Length: 456
Ligand SMILES: Nc1ncnc2c1ncn2[C@@H]1O[C@H](COP(=O)(O)OP(=O)(O)OP(=O)(O)O)[C@@H](O)[C@H]1O
Ligand code: NI
Image 1 (tube, rainbow, N blue to C red):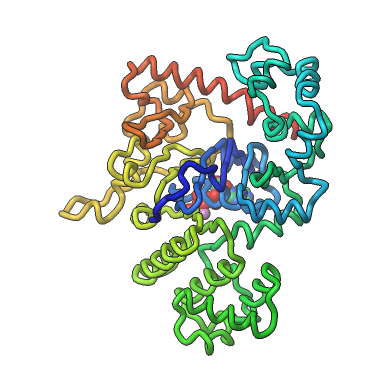
Image 2: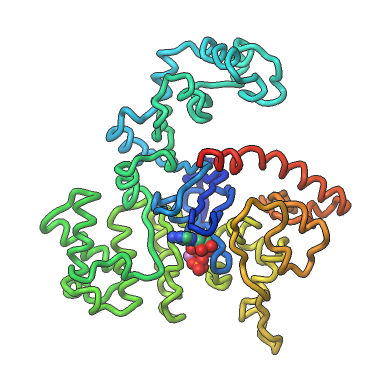
């Protein structure tokens, strides 16, 4: 875990209402169903959940690697990292919105007037407290800014930015909207901005090239290094991931490396691109426990050195305890609980999380038999009007089959802890809590998924 110097800053990654589905002959699988969360700079965010809960599809959505029959159907994935934003803005000027320039070129009051005369209301633009306000008031109060118009899509609607804009730059700030990025933009983003390590290192390594050549290729592509400089850097990277005798082993092929050494080589290859966000999808699952511990330690070291942000996927709560600052629990495509790691372990709120924690072997020393949650994760193939965990939940009651729980604040203190379960808010009578979920679920239900399905 790392010290956070930049807590107040914008998160490096913001995922909002992400929805990714697979369209098979038989059904539509809502693999990622309306999830939202953030990753701060230098933070390790864990994603945990049983097999089939949507962890990998979440990662692939962020990488822009969802292939047919899958598609990102809605929501937003914003990557805020100045170097990447500048680089992509230079490469894709036509698809970049420069907020500063827009401020100079357009009269904000006039733009807002056009929106208000069209099909938008002041409360929509600036919140309930501005219901009925005129354009001048909204602008004078700073309730609407040019940056908002760009972020919320109004600028595209007004025709002042390209509707396929995926880079937004506002002075030294800005972001890349991954879900709008063209294939070429995604290619540029991957590696250098966001890199990913998979469970099986062989998916990232080509068997016919030496380890060294593969790292050098990454160095050439992403940092323009060639020849002797690339070789020296490749050796340095292999040494950084503790591969002994790196200078000699650089000329070996993947099959000459052990599983643990291969995964180190893949990490070296990811680092070759100097990413800001590293997504690890079960990188240690296939390795034995000692090697696994070494790799986790290595990742932590690298993170501290470079203030790297990490998204770490695992179904193993023990591994999560080792590495995560914050943990997001997924179940059947949904985010069901989110909390700082220590809070989640000390005080899990969702019955699913409680079940996962009870199945950690080390928590059961002293004779108690290892418990796992009975039953399987259902395939999320319809829009839920109920709790997807209810059939397996020891706490389920009638309403769980009729009301879809939304994430509510369950924090004690300033922990920023949410859970999606009808048992909460805890201080409400049960009927009131159910009504609370119902009303908030109603709000979100009309927004994303239904509308999106109409397009199909
Ligand atoms: N190419 C695909 N075609 C159809 N369905 C898919 C495809 N890829 C994933 N899915 C479905 O999406 C859902 C989520 O899968 P995902 O791989 O994200 O789970 P996971 O949480 O990573 O599980 P695991 O721990 O087994 O890796 C599953 O129901 C899966 O069947
Ligand atoms: Ni997976």
